[in-house]
Length: 176
Image (cartoon, rainbow, N blue to C red; front, side):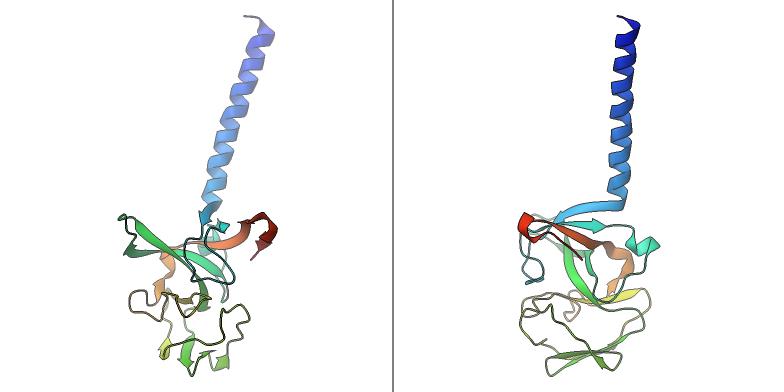
């Protein structure tokens, strides 16, 4: 084998190794996911492909209005752990009140133009504990969220990532 051929092979091997390392680093920062439920309609529909920013819970502050994916103790029909996608409504220290179909955070009516339907069912009056979040889906009539004892306040540590961009369907690509 000629020296030039060996150099060409080594160049390909280096490129391959660098590509694998770069892919592993990227997957530490972002994660693709597929929306499976209707709880975030009209913002997200089933089979939407989104990319999550995984570093947000460690390096950046989560904010009210962010769409997040978090792990739960619930399981799917096939026994796998179920992740949920919801919108952050309450941050640690926030006072959340839901009454007469309205959501009030820290004594201010929450403007929610993203909702499917205009009202939020339920009666809630609570203070969000440190290290916790109050989350709800945009399709409030069907959303299993912090209003339910099955979900309740979620631990910030269970947050997998914040929705960054919807990639599919292609005609609905958008940043969050």
